[in-house]
Image 1: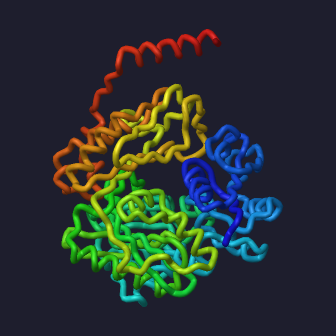
Image 2 (image 1 turned 45 degrees about the horizontal axis):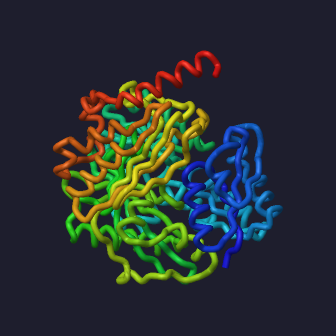
Image 3 (image 1 turned 135 degrees about the vertical axis):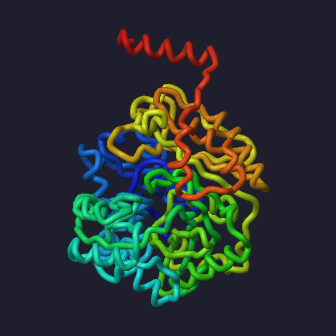
Amino acid sequence: MIKKILIANRGEIAVRIVRACSEMGIKSVAIYTDADRYALHVKKADEAYNIGSDPVIGYLNAHNIVNLAVAAKCDALHPGYGFLSENPVLAEICAKRGIKFIGPSPQVIRQMGDKIQARKAMIDAGVPVVPGSEHNLESIAEAKELAAKIRYPVMLKATNGGGGRGIRRCNSEDELIKNYDRVVSEATKAFGKPEVFMEKCVVNPRHIEVQVMGDSLGNVIHLFERDCSIQRRNQKLIEIAPSPQLSRAQRDYIGKIAVQAAKTVGYENAGTVEFLLDQDNQFYFMEMNTRLQVEHTVTETITGIDIVQEQIRIASGLPLQYKQEDVNYRGFAMEFRINAEDPKNDFLPSFGRVTRYYAPGGPGVRTDAAMYTGYVIPPYYDSMCAKLTVWSLTWEGVVERGKRALNDMVVYGVKTTKPYYIEILKHPGFVGRKFDTSFVETHPELTNYSVSRPKESLAAAISAAIAAHVGL
């Protein structure tokens, strides 16, 4: 069994992994840059090591991170999500240095990270894919020819992309010409490779993903699906498990083909197979994420399975603890990404000191946070500072509990997306389970909320501002 894990990440996901290690009697090692010296994951881990003054480069240096894992006598490394989590080079270096990588093999990461290879693998597995290019586009002329064949609108996508970046919708040939070089440039800057491919744009789909788990013995199961349709500019905001929009037959079908996809590529550890569900109720494979997802909390909440602990067990060579027939779900869970952004100002990032923070509690409430009162949210990273997950037996119950828990959460000093989510939960379309990926775009009025503060909170904010002004 693994005895000591280096966590090659930061923020709430690093805290989440530290907690899993603690419950399993495993030592945890955190890494941090100067910007993260006072971060919560540094305070929580058994050991912590500085990886440099640059706020970002240290988290992206695979060789240095693995060297540190060896020096700290770790026998495993957990990449979390983001940063190097889907970088096959990190997994390869771990293998060479005798460190267990808590994730799939480098070959699978590389195959599924390349969207063209992933499409081919899914076609071989009999999984439906969106019509599109069979190889990387070589020129704008080829792009125009293919777009005319599959018909507009189309999506230009970075072949090695992820996280909603390197994607442009083109509704006409003029937009295709305008966006082609932009996507190539975005792909090169964000992912280091200029490869781009094209898919038919599925208009206003629902974004449905399936959590899968596979062990080294060839066993693969799914932990049901999540609905990630509430998103802005391809960035998820609210995630729900199970999807309130699927029938039992649809749920069984998508779970089956997700397992089929994972078995076809020899998948090991935790992964997510993502689909688009069109207006005609046709599922299409979109991509496979070869890592732990931000929204794994909702799956854990409805199934009772600790996904991070299962990841560690699998990396230790142990078989899955569960067969498919052992996995059931109960009720509904909903996760809100609490981002340090101002929804009233086009979601402009709002970094700075958290002058007051109280986490919500009560039945069916879970908070995964990287912040605390007095913590300074740095401007160098993703704006997500906490995740709020709520659960209830019914859809109506989880919506009401979500509103209550969001109202209970107190965050002063920075603006967050919290009040915006409350407005979404009040919307008849959301409450009526009728939403797709266009929901945020088609309801700009949801940012017209007002925030009322208790008198004592307003007084505290004024006092803090005066103290800051006079240098107290």
